[in-house]
Length: 100
Image 1: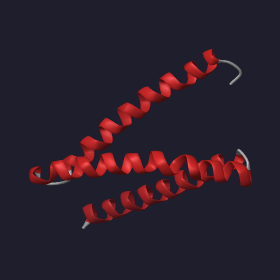
Image 2 (image 1 turned 135 degrees about the vertical axis):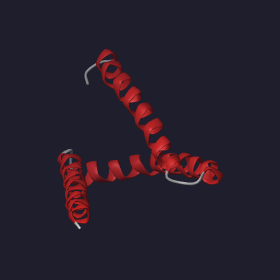
Image 3 (image 1 turned 30 degrees about the vertical axis):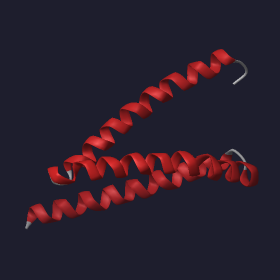
Image 4 (image 1 turned 45 degrees about the horizontal axis):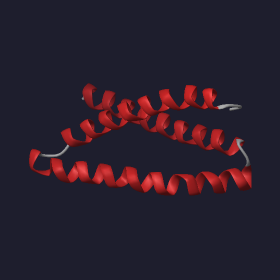
């Protein structure tokens, strides 16, 4: 980014997408617990988000300082591959259960 306009151009869509992601995540997590535990789950979601907002910049600064910008892309690739393999295995297991 070279000026404030570019910063605003990038930050506004990111804020919107993170807000939508938080609502979807909270909704999914509260539907997995009984209605009596909904408040507990919402509290856990809020506390984890605050914790990540505190720890995230520290980890990012460490990675940037020691390994450079390429470390962010590499870590994202590893996380995406792990999620892909996990989902692929779950899908294969569910197909095997439906066959039986």
